[in-house]
Amino acid sequence: MLRIQASVRPQIFGSRVLSGVSVAVIGAGLAGLRTASELSRAGYEVTVFEGLSVVGGSAAGSFRDGFSLDGTLPLVRSSDRALISWIEQSELSASLLPPRACIDSQIHRGEIGPIDTSTLSDLAKIPGVTTWDKKRLLRLPRLMARYRAQLDPDRPELAANLDYRSARDFATLYLGKSVWDYWVSPETTSQYASDEMELSRVAFLLSRMTSREGKVALGVMRQGLWQLAERAASRLNVVHDLWADEVTERGDGGYQVHCSFATEDGETHAQKRPRAIDVDAVVVATSPEAAGEIAGPVLVPAERDYFARYRGGPSMSLVLALSAPLAHYAKFVRVPKAEASTIECYLSECGAADGRAPDGKGLVMIRANERFASANSSAADDVVEKSLLASFSRFHPEVRDRVLFTRLRRTQTGNPNFHVGAYRELARLARVQEDRGAAGRRIYFAGDYLIGPGPNQVVSSGMRAAAALRAHFEG
Image (tube, rainbow, N blue to C red; front, side):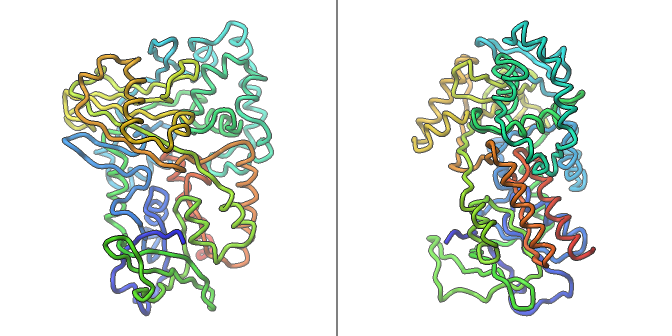
């Protein structure tokens, strides 16, 4: 059985001390912490179970020699309302905001240049877009107007009726192949990190609506996003050294989180199993693979089928700490498929006194593309590092003499999958869960697989789960 390690404070066993509504949040990633923070602020008794010694999930990070080693790109856009609002509530605005300016860039024939995709005239200037396809871009506003009523970033399943065509087919048909190759493909894959041949057109439409229509500023947070997770966790009851095995329903309508202690070698023993922890509601904020195992006993067949079929994609990122910056400004660079590189995108920063790298130093975060990550899922870490560093050196030959240390981060199923059909599956899942909620079930889910990749979407999913739970108890 898949298990999540967590610890416990003695007082949560036995009878409930307080008379309020008790909630178990399983998983202390950004989604779980945002859910827990919102519910705790509203007066609920919240206990968060986390299986690792750190919080933040995919965004977990740490400092090393003054460098912030992040688990996810620390980019923020002016349209990221959910993330910015949480930062402001956490009283970390002075540390994380305002973000440092970041230049949106792209590689074309080995040369790095700035791009702007805010307007049609800006799109037409992207290197590689042909003259004929520049004219076809005039169709884009009409297409967006046609579909906008079905596009809600907080409820992407509402666009299920549009989920019958890939982003590649859609862009190539209406906008032209060069627009796909040099704008839509690098734009969407840099956000969704998915197989570009399978990615749904809904992903592109949502991306365009939320990130690019109108002037949307791109910036880099002054400190790591993992510090937001740690601040949130410090204000919550996050417990460790206990395995949350599964959730079952009590006869009175409540729930039990069944747990077992873990020994130092990670093995569990049935005779050490404590009593189940009684709660009024549960939020499962783990990966979908883990969610299906943990919540299995309280799910209906349609939900079990969804979680059993779900498969996330592999991810690889490499952080380089440099003795000197590559440039005296931050830039986010996309790498189109035509460049025949193993890299999908990267963020290059210069150090600052109050920044994520020491003053005078440099910091780079490289993300491998889906093709490379899939092909090298079983390769040794040093092989992956050498391949990514070699690819990066094509664009920045000077980097090899500046590397102080590196950190590779990889997962087998860490990327959410938004292939053609994924939004229809989300719509079916949402209908089933709404039906179960109307019948009185108080099990909720949060995570990037329900809404979209990126910190803002993950935070939004946590808010959505908290809102659904509060609607049940507060009406």
